[in-house]
Length: 127
Image 1 (spheres, rainbow, N blue to C red):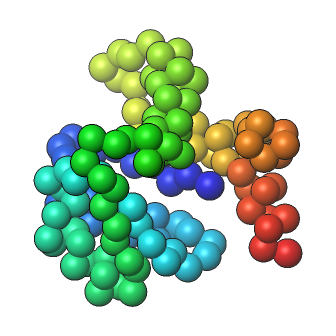
Image 2 (image 1 turned 120 degrees about the vertical axis):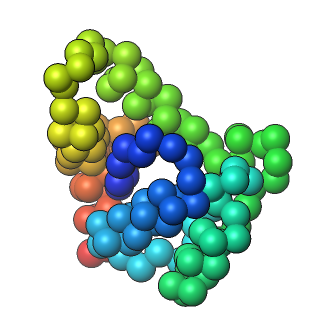
């Protein structure tokens, strides 16, 4: 399952807000968050998630392949959302992203889940 949100800048405040957003949307307890070493994931972010009882682990510098699921999801967003969308100033990007998130989680079959949607795979796993 994915939770998506748009921010104008990479800041620790936005990273904290996004972590809170994911925690609120998640149907299960999050035990660990893994991030790259970007400035938005430094001390304030680190201690925020740790204070919530979530372990924060940094991936090794220069090794995005260690965060392969995130990199793959970014590629799906690029190929199946942003690239197919003709942007005009009056488009509500947040509404479109919400629609994409719902489709991705509840309607789009995934090879990694034997053709199930992420929601179906999660539901089966939690039963």
